[in-house]
Amino acid sequence: MSDETVLTNARLVLPDRVLPGTLLLRGGTIAEISPGRSAAPGALDLEGDFLIPGVVDVHTDNLERQVLPRSQARWPSASAFLAHDGQVAVAGVTTVLDALCLGDLGFDESRLQTARDGVRDLGALTASGALKSEHLLHLRCELPATDMLPMLEEFHADPHLRMVSLMDHTPGVGQYVDADRYRAMRVKGGAKPEAVERRIAELAEQRAAYAEPNRRALLDLFRGRDVPLATHDDWDPAIVARNAADGIGMSEFPVNLPAARAARAEGMAVIAGAPNLVRGGSHSGNVAAADLAREGLVDIIASDYVPPAMIEAAWRLVEEAGMTLPAGVATITANPARALGLHDRGRIEPGLRADLVRLREFGGMPVVQAVWRGGARIA
Image (cartoon, rainbow, N blue to C red; front, side, top):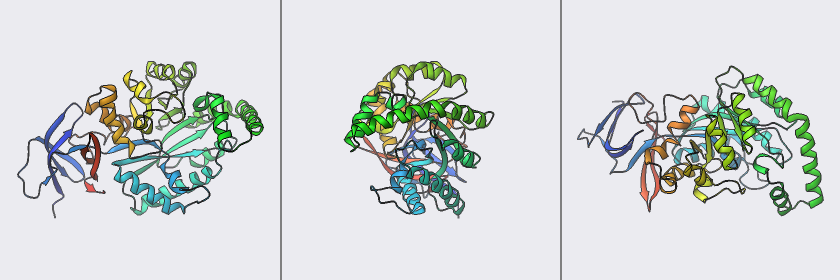
């Protein structure tokens, strides 16, 4: 049986142009790119659909959503992981970094169990060959949490670890830099105003005691290692400058334009959320990703919490930020692959992995028709 596959009559989204053409896949890699149609026996006619590289997602919380599909209804861990895998595969995500939270600030203690179970399941399911997409590990480290560092010491040597991000969800900084918005959110969720005020004061004290020592310990742990570091919810250009000086190369979900501009000036890759683009703004009241993109301040799109939003977000960059289609697609393929040091994927080029997604437009919206990982059909 031949290990060759011919995909023809496709609009190939290459790094610098869209080419009507044909791909020859061999041994799990892209062997040849040629313009025009192929008459080879057995060639698969893609009927003029787009063909893009497999999507590389640097951050998704989707596993948490499968573990807890409804409040108080915790799903069996391995079953939840397989459901998550199926969802990212049909969304065209062939490489996914499962973002697991280390450390609890009293928002959701069950996340710590999800992290422990998730690391275990990722290793076991990968070894079994049961997963459609390639899953890697992104550890999200809550710096003010008293239990973050012990968990990090437990997982920092995991062979699937590919990214670490530094977070601080204390009200008054980062995502919750608007403390009044945080207060309103908690009261709307059923908390008493006086309890919210007590909690804000407690978290401020905890941050003062633990955030800085935990930050230094984390940076020491990863100094000299080939694990990319990111910060989460940057809000202050001075903080961004400090992060860059410490060797942190990515700014994930900056909450305002000054922080994103500072990250760009420091040479950091800026990561925006796909749901922010698709919904037309941030769910938490921070800067709109479209505004960042219009200033040329978006390098990478991450799914955040909706994997199917990735490809639609790349398409929206063309309409809303004036990007070319190859540049928009690069934010979900080539750029994240490069930032993670995954140089064998992310572009349609000879010699690279045959991770590919077939797309058909419906009312201007891209719809996934087929997905290949390493030349094998997975969706």
